[in-house]
Image (cartoon, rainbow, N blue to C red; front, side, top):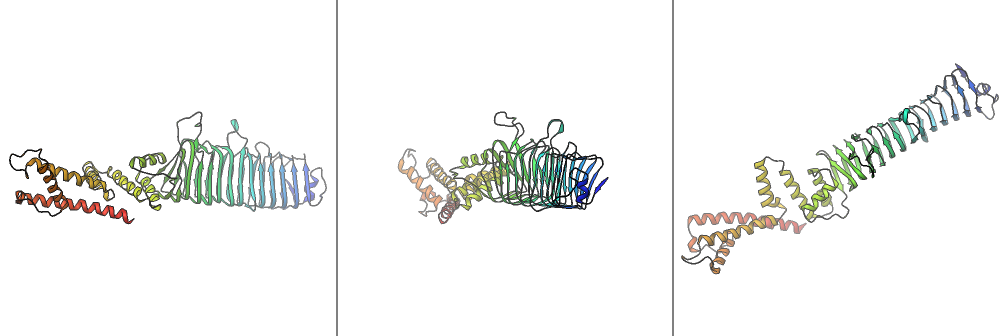
Length: 484
């Protein structure tokens, strides 16, 4: 192994021979063995088209700027060093790049093969362009990370990107990529951006922590669920242009792009896409506002999810049909959680009439899950007759129907008609209606002499009790609406 300990030794292996201003520039030089730079200190080292018959290793060095361009080597290894600006570009085919246990100000990798970054401290930007192999980043702190574009495909296969234990002070961006897979685990950053990223395997993110925002724009994923698990986003989570591979505007495969949040908390969530997509929440919560989905995008909420508020964008609900139509446009299924989310949003805006409609609709839908007998009693009596205590028109209709039916029965039975008097007599028909009204409303006009029997008295008490129930309920509902 060729071991270099000084700049002079490095200069002598090439054409430069001498050191100028603590800088060495080797160009088109060859080393027939492994090359090790051990404890070298300098301002600038430029290795241009250096051919090494083995591995090029930089160990325990202190260099202000190190540039490795078009290196022909089996591997490039930078370990346990302090480097201001490190640039590695256009490495030879099959040349793996590994940087470990190193402190840097700036790191740029361009058109390299397999890249492994471990236990780094980078004060500024880490920039990786034109991927030609997998990228693995672990236990690293940096200011910002940008991974952009790749040149692999066909027989070379598409690169895989993994980031574990990564902390960024500013932002992390993945842009213009077609990857075999993207896995994020234990990533902590203010901002995360996935832009024009295409994946052959579902996205996997675990313990993602973003203090500001997550932006997903133009993400193409396979039909299986992509998941974000055990994560926290303290700002907006914006998803735009989510689609399944091959499911474009002109050629649709009919599949739905699915992104699922498991045990995850976000401040706000918005989604829009031209093709069918679903953002699912499983045991997750939106503490702020859930934006209305745009295009063919929808949400899915399970029973353990929660929504703090929901954007309504001027939506007005005049009846239950409009509510159901809105929910079907926004959610994959009209569930109790979806109904409660919209109801809470209306309550925040003091739209009490619509809140009552949502409450009635939610209770009626919950009753559908009961056994047949209980379902009939609950939906028919509590919902249809009593209106769940929020619809005054339901008990009012029942009360009016009861009065009319009682009047008709009294008139047909001849309780108030003299013998031989016809049914067409308007006077006695009106008298029957007045008596029925008095019975139901407990007016207290007194019973006619013809009806002063024990049986009629029992019937009158029953009518009066039912009438008091309905009138009290109606008055209570109306007063509640007025005081709100």
